Length: 137
View 1: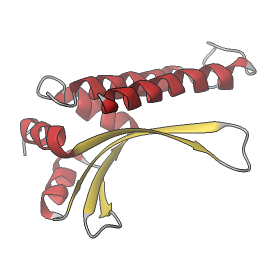
View 2 (view 1 turned 90 degrees about the horizontal axis):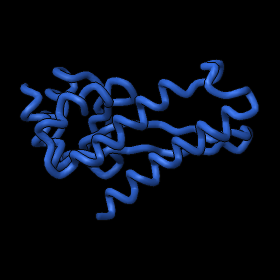
View 3 (view 1 turned 180 degrees about the vertical axis):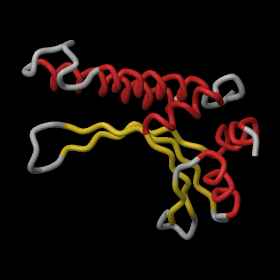
């Protein structure tokens, strides 16, 4: 399977997600990034998994979802960018989010320990909101 096939399929059927999760017992917010494609038939998703990695799981609606997380999702989006039409701007936002997530970590010397959560959360939320806005247009 070629990246061009995946890009075309993803442009029509794929999703780029930046999720925010706040756990009850923790004071911080967690942000995750992934790409996915959902289908009723599993065969093509298994082929995508075989070629590009990730996982395939039932989606709860009688179909299946292929999902690729974090840095691997960023890498695949970077390969698909020249081919994508519909999701090109969303892909660019996802790539920026994941790249920033890698640069902004505790102990990275960019921020003091007190500043880290506030600055990191603010930047991650900014990318999440940018992606949500792009999906509405």
